[in-house]
Length: 104
Image (cartoon, rainbow, N blue to C red; front, side):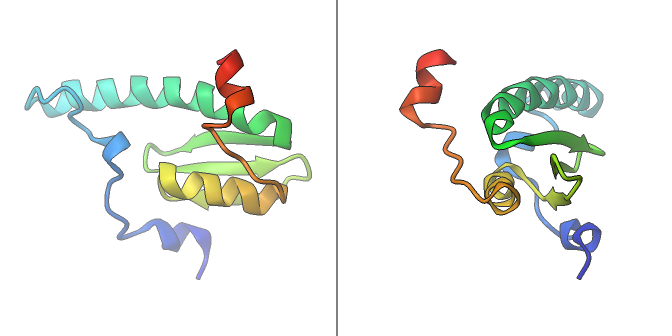
């Protein structure tokens, strides 16, 4: 199965809720979700940069992970992102590592 098809049918991760503030306003929720996703990507890229990776938003539905050699994988949600990053980089990536938290 290609990586694009692997994303279809995957439920929303709790971190990607379209109405994170519980406003019951879909438009406001989407705008807030996009803003939060942008902030999240800045932090994610700080975490994966030492492994030679770059993460980007993939149409607001998933994350694209690319290494320095141009290899590319799609991660369906934030949970899958770490596994995908480790597969591409060949190194363990721990966003809760004490060294990272000390400078974050």
